[in-house]
Length: 263
Length: 263
Image (cartoon, rainbow over all chains, first blue to last red; front, top):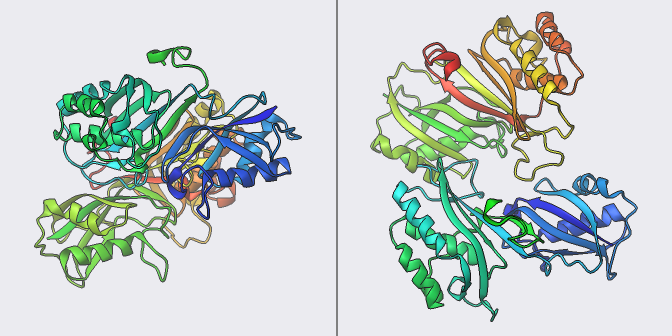
């Protein structure tokens, strides 16, 4: 058996999830805590990579003994979250732990993920939301929000999202299925939600940047559909800042199994 | 005329509001920004002191030219918030600016203040709320919340709050009028609200620490009333951590003028 962990983290201090060179990453913090809790070096496989400064309300990892397929834990599974949290910094938390079969894979078995992109649309900056939302101080009308929500609808379906991938990315299969995409406003916070079977590099941030241009009246909903169809990165909008992006849900059941839109 | 500013700040990085020795404070940041915006050194008088790590959703200050009674601004008043925010760090924001008469005093003219104390009562720590709420992981029943709210009611009225003042404080007039005190829970967040014409040193944090003991079943509501009447610091609970405390409202109208309970 492997140990499966649901975690959440504030990404501000980290150079993303994945271990890399000298930079401080979430995976490195998990590695150090797992070695303390289990008593031996571990391998940790995450459900996804995340960029520097991106947050996760839900992120999943599998823990095995280093270079082995599984892990025999002497710590009762129910105690693993609190034990791990004793050795993790305040901005990373283990929410749940369970045992999964050795053939389970934290990344390859993901059926869909949901991201949320948050925008602070107050008149002035909000000191409680620095590094937690994009700041868009210009007045946005209800009609602009409706148009941006309509534009978000253009993302839904099985499509080639090459235009919404960071230039320089070497992925060749750029077709993904988007199950849900919507934009709404509550008070001074504008939220873009998108669920898909997979995401290209910077895909959500380019979607968000494009919808911001719709909110600003600089782009029509039709132009978003055209940008998708063009498969040309230059036709999509700019990449919205990392600080507004949250991995919100990771599902190992399909979107249909989870109840689709009703969730 | 003086310049009156409504600001808000995340207190985590600051040794409180008031300038002191070598420590970084909110007032010092405001001083530096004001000098940049107005073009000369200024004096800044705040509505209150705050402890290290305490936050403010609303905090008020008056700005005058250094060693003078008022300030003639060449910056239009409506532009002052955005101008100040250009020179302030991300965790301090000017929300509103206006002009007030020279006889107005940011501290002495306060009629009442409202504080909010927030507690994260989830099973595990929340990485998004580190340094923003006290963490209380034990299960709390609805009955415990009701009892703590009943206990909070004992704070209301004109009373001697000496038992709820940090020992060592040299204030001699320890009578204050509490207009409102309540405790409630929404999801995993427990919130204590208290409004009064003034607060003694650490008063809200000692009130919160005492109510936490009621939540934990370690103290009855009656014992809270007894602790107040004792005027003995040792009879009240411990001082809850600074990170959960927010100055929520500063009013220059009386509680009755503001509509009291209805607000």
